Image (cartoon, rainbow, N blue to C red; front, side, top):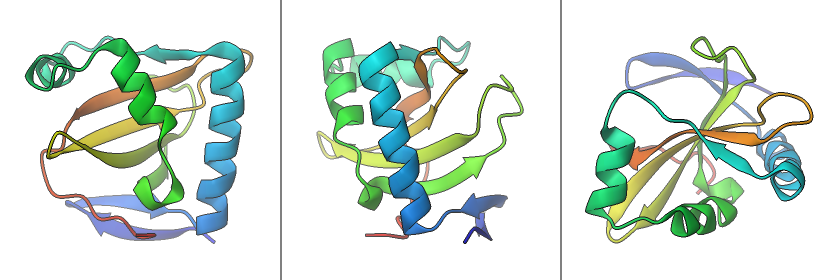
Length: 129
């Protein structure tokens, strides 16, 4: 059952453990078939993180491939920017930094999408840890 909670002054959806498991299952099946597309954004948070932590594309993929239910933070959230598919937020630690990862299933018959991949601006809450 989905519930709403306030996360850093944003009202976000909190999915159940089984909904997160289902999302990750669908995400990784689609990832293996269609691969992942990292969105190029105009802000520099993502690029700064790649440089600061020496994150190669291969390492970013490894981090995303390691995501589990325990890494879940929030979602599904409506995609108001790209209007493609719901967004899901996860966190992962790398080189003593907490990484904020926002992913989506993307369009049908197409890549999954990573919208954000950067050092978290605030401590994240992990409801299933």
